[in-house]
Length: 164
Image (cartoon, rainbow, N blue to C red):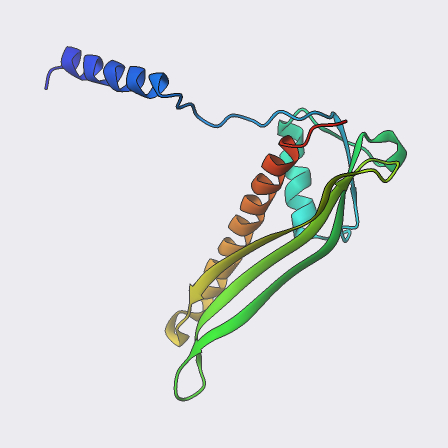
């Protein structure tokens, strides 16, 4: 296929996608500018991942609850691992990694903008004795990816909230 034909084909595909309403997901837009995080542990992995994302967004993180327009309140955060498959000898062959965050979004005056909601992510992790160290690294990578995904889901949910 010649270069002009490829260009024309790419242009045709692009026009078709634009015509059907397709567009890449951009940065979310929020109805508020100042956010306060409450209820998270000081060393919470989700809090750290959220704080790492915020500089790229039009949101300012406030230290004082009264300065914020909205408060993201973590009601419960848990990270755990369950054995889901084992050998006859009792050795675990597969784990499930769980990340659960119960949260709500309120105003500093305690008006509820988003009632208590649960965000739950689950990933499967197979394991073998021969690759123990590699599986530990894989687990750490999966946990980091789950935290990033949880933050992105949380930010999209916050972007859907409209102030009254």
